[in-house]
Length: 449
Image (cartoon, rainbow, N blue to C red; front, side, top):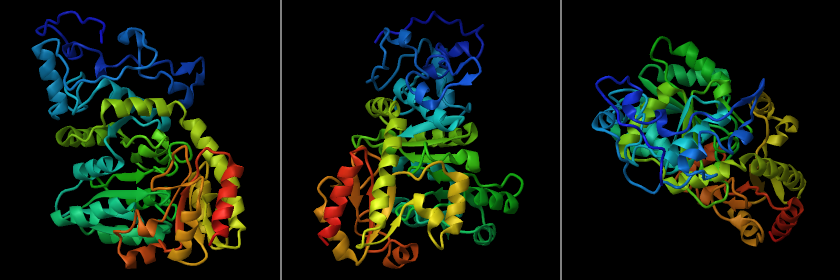
């Protein structure tokens, strides 16, 4: 892989930028982001942002950089790079060092992820859980408290309560749909100790309950003053980046399982974290230490997927509208936990208000509560012909699973009951198939109960 040659550097007279031997962050200068007064949309920028074909023999698409290490132009540049990756100088390396720290594919991908939410910086990881684990490890220490919404994805709850709990980290939670007063009560109680992080998940997995990010931010700012304000992080996997942009509503760190909509083809596992440079620098230092970066091939596949993200999510969202309208009226369905129904569902006024203020779309993942219990839910799942019985979501294909017996099996029965994760709840993620075909499949599966 030939690169544009770099002239020798005289370290004695060079300024800080010259000492790297390459352009900052080792990539092309930012691509065109405006034409006249028109700011280009993310779907347009995904086709080339952060990549210069002339640095890679004119290749239209970035090559996969399958290497473990990178050659420094001189010793001064090597020292400068290691000052960044070790945290001696903030901001990470200004050049390529070693594939545990950075790589061209990962860095281009990070730039493109940031575009969707106008985040200052971003990092990619080997899985959604490695992103969450690296975030938590970079923020907390023994004796700290994490305040979080509930429910969370089961592995996240396990990580906080059982794994970090073994090292003296405590937690307090409030329900996803909590009011400002309910959030204040939990925050006030937590403030008697050192709160290191406020961690949210919205919509909650698998109930689809929304968190009022604005209320959480207002509560945090009212109760925590000075320099002790804990950052607000949120898992935006279910709606982002198309239907919810949490940074606009008060969050400071956004977490993704990129396996889902960003990857979108059920053929990779990856995670991402976006946010302010200050927070990303802290998380990057932990990632550099424990090596949770994603590999170059996965990064390349994600760049491919980001080019069609808006198309795929839009089609899946349109399909979900039609499918949920059918399911809602079926006699064997007790309820459909779909965000698009909040406005006309009695008792959901609070959730409808959050949706109106935060979201631009209802997404394509929802909960289906069938009449009966586990027996009826299993009968429905076993009868599906087009939809696949599998965990995960956000792929091109429609998936259905049983959270109480699968993804949330490790959650105690008492907590599942409190959070509404019942035996008759089925989680469905609608794909990009023909919507009428999906309706036919769900109809025959329900009839089989």
